[in-house]
Image (tube, rainbow, N blue to C red; front, side):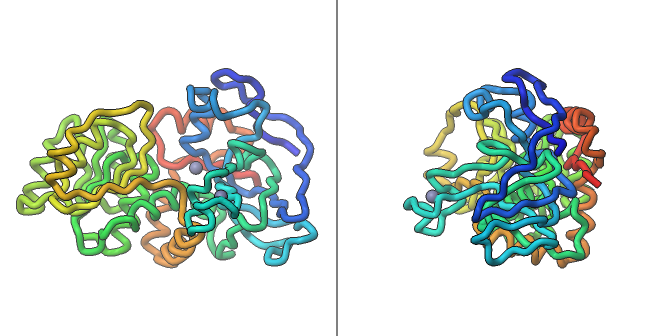
Length: 347
Ligand SMILES: [Zn+2]
Ligand SMILES: [Zn+2]
């Protein structure tokens, strides 16, 4: 089969190769990939930053966001059949550690991620454990089903807050931030403030999927605008997807006392914060978010996909579509920042 393989431990270093179709072990399911989408994680692997250098062992077929059709199941597989339309939860949990046994499989202490620690989805076929298979609604377009990994991050983060009827600020409006805006507006948040920095393309996208205010922290008086719109109260909840010191600082500034701050962004370095002023005396709740709840988040996504307006929003967030063999073009588009989600069609 054809697969995009990180062959060299260097920036770029990706080749379209002919590789064997993966084995489906007794507990695994072999899936023919119809659509794969590019994640921020894939950009890290492509660019070969310090995270990738420490984590990735080349050669690796990367990619972990996909939708496809089951073609073969292992001998122990009971709940998945050939022909079914599926996606996959990319965190493979061990099932035995403290976290797994306490309903926190999403932070399993022995997590393996396909496309990171084992062969992934930038390929014609992928093999994943039966436990990680998610059955999609067959009436949904494959490209919508392929973006459930980042959408699940957004859903998990939003539902970690008490957002319904509340004023919510989303800091960081890459694809996950834009998805969070749509989830909030479709699930009953009051005013949603989407806050980016310089990237007008993404500020416009946040507006297009329903943000009441789409702002730039570079040029707009974000705090003034939020305080005015909330009668001096501030935002009740903060959804943080930026992974920057400035975003956290601004988020805590615009959050009201007793608010909830859900943090999904990954920070490249430690940061300094005035915790007394911004957290303790503010009676703030800060929640770290990782992955997707298995499988609460996935059921919530299935529910969201039944809302027509939500499906339309997700179609807007997928801004670029490429053929599979146009991987380099797709990656360049993703890296330009002038895009929402970028997907590749294999058929
Ligand atoms: Zn992803
Ligand atoms: Zn575990």
